[in-house]
Length: 136
Image 1 (cartoon, rainbow, N blue to C red):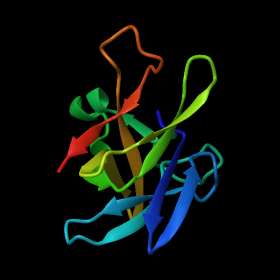
Image 2: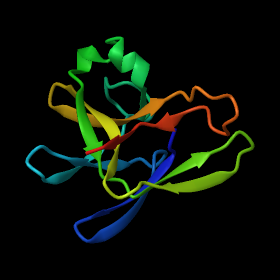
Image 3: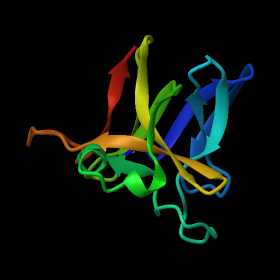
Image 4: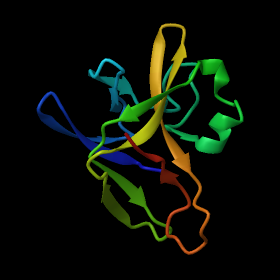
């Protein structure tokens, strides 16, 4: 799962770590506008939203997130950071024309976004989870 991302919003570069209290992600709306939405939920936050910042793709399809009226969204992220099995960090670029899949959740008047992640089928990879990449 990505633990940090970089993106541009309103002509400014941002590097955001999930662990930061005010972590946000850029969500592209259907009208083409991009808005910043709180990235998941940390344990110290007063919210009824699920803990963490990631949603397993399989659990979404199994309906485990349905209570929060999940909406698929495109996250306009330029790079994401992963930590491998040996604790090394590496940044990966998102190819132009591709987006990271997110789900936008709602609980009352509160909105949060989570990065959709996949479990790799192969056993010879350094990462046990990977963000779902979509092509427009």
